Length: 482
Image (cartoon, rainbow, N blue to C red; front, side, top):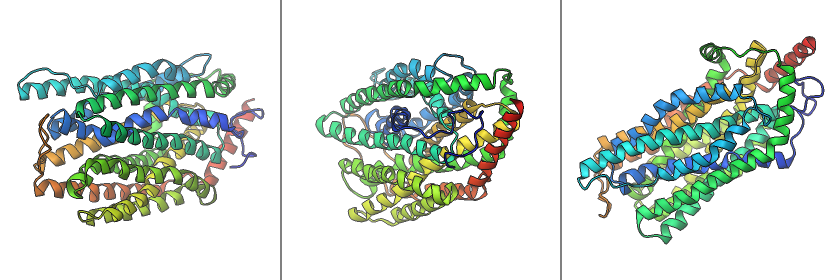
């Protein structure tokens, strides 16, 4: 939509004005911390559990899955609470302000290896329960900072194209931070010989980097958020908040929302399964050293970063669905190619990594840019804005995708006979069954997820024209109420 797009708020609303660069940068910075922590978790946590802490793959995968059972409860609850928050800084920013430091602390604790017993079995179970507890607290703090942040998108602007642009800035920081985190990992791993110290030092650096940008986001967006929040209160001063279960019923009766969460879930499962298996694929199947892993990750994410703004530009001309189809098709080709790679084919591996980056970029960009459109449809139907609960389920799916992906890989590796490392001893040679399982995880599983996402995207009903009609009807209704 252009600057003359219809507005859902009264005529003097700022909600569809063009955003300045300062606001976009500050907003984008808010995803830097959650992104770099999630990135290191996706690529290295399963390896850390099995090859450094000495936990079996099955127990390692179960740790994160257990944490997500709690997430299934706290994500929607935090979403509703943030919708109901009353503050001079708006509904979302106080959550970022107070949650940032605890989030960083629990992230560091996730990479500590405490000693519980000299008996290997007792030590393994002690570590299992330690990481389960830390996972529960860490995921809660991730929800506290990330869920209200994601809900800001729909509140900062209602312009169709501005939202895609805003999402591009968000994921530019997200993917850029992810690349920086991998570079830092490579520097730390090459500088410190002890694996335990490697991950602990990296965790401290990443923990600090996770906290500081959240405060940049708070201070950089505060003025606009406060102004629009005052406008929202004036407009919705008489609205009554519905009970939680009734809100859930309304959310899941929103058909386009079900399509969006399905598209996002399958896209994110493809991302997370691929991310988690890359270290095993590069080292165990392709036969390269672990120092090659960060450069492969950078090839994927660097391409995804560059393509964000290209896809955003193309989206303004052909629409979000068309861009999603383009990116996913290229990604499926790349995943299929990885399955047929043979040990030592370094150049082909990098080419396919770059090609995969084209698709990964659309997996970040498109589902999140669809969400605000869904929220406005809900507003048209119900007369209320409930960004928090909608984004609550999106954040839940993001974390579920990470947890389920790691759990699934843990189970597959366990069944295939993968040999976890014993601390202080060389990494064992893997059996052929484990190598075949890694190949299966690098291609068929992500490809199936991506195809299912494409099917749902084909039937997604909110086009650019439909969204324009939604905003027009909101404008007419609000003028009538005024």
